[in-house]
Amino acid sequence: MIQIIFEPMTKEDVKEALVLYNHYIKTSTSTFSITPLDEHEMEQILFSGLERFPSYKILKEDKFIGYVLLNRYKPREAYDQTAEVTVYLEEAYHGKGIGYEALKFIEDFGKKHSFRALLGVICAENIGSIKLFERLGYFKCAHFKEVGKKFDRLLDVVIYEKLLED
Image 1: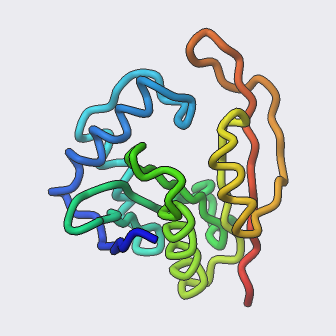
Image 2: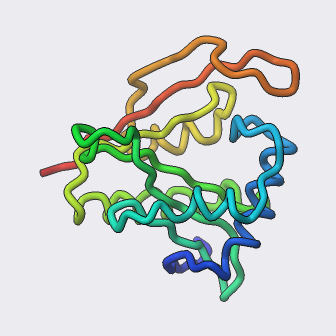
């Protein structure tokens, strides 16, 4: 297992996160964004302004290799015990257990901050992410047919859920 550490994202990390995210915008269906973002838009993704919904950089030997964060599922108060999980890694680090460690890390944060449910919203063709979430005990709770269009293809979205222990 590769040794990694998690540190809170700072404004200085936005550029590296932006390069990573824009790579996935251009090359994959991991995100349904189509147009590359600018720094301000990336800041809005990374920094909700709410302490319960943090973002963390993932470092290997002080090198930025990805990030993990919690987002509000919906902006209504009744959903405040639910969060959407997002993980992005440099492609060179896929399949090395880092995504697993990132999900475990953010789940621990969720437990400490009274979250009940965590959700992974995933393009249905992203088998690697689906397997990762399943490996950590998430279950498929929704399947939306042809709700996104990217690269001239209609795409399904699945939602995987994990209920955190009391």
